[in-house]
Amino acid sequence: MKTAYELAMERLAKQGPVVTLTDDQKREIAELESRFKARLAEREIAAQGEIANAEATGDFEAADKARQALAADRRKLQEELERKKDEVRQRKA
Image 1 (tube, rainbow, N blue to C red):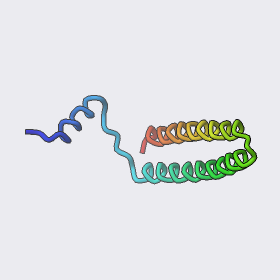
Image 2: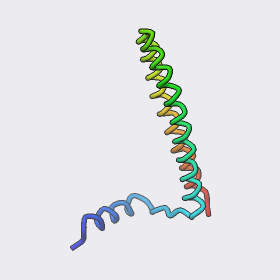
Image 3: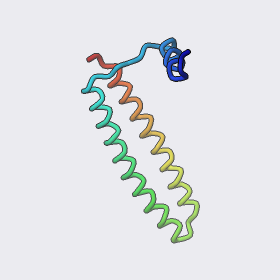
Image 4: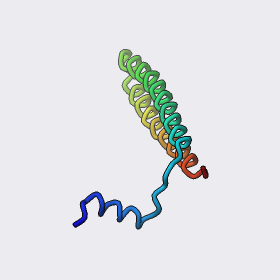
């Protein structure tokens, strides 16, 4: 009898081949993730300052706009990260 893990791996194999990454590709992806985490952290710090200033002055509309801009920046950065990771994965070793 097969374990749930083995069954899941079989289903995944049927969907497409398993992509193995080289050590260089793994390192590149790790570097990309690190850089994007830093960029996101910088943006969050700046946005939190904008939000705090807006709320302190009672401008809740500006605070909401800053929150929305931060959410949009998060999505944009995440999409960019995934695109770059896919590019690394697609490269031949």
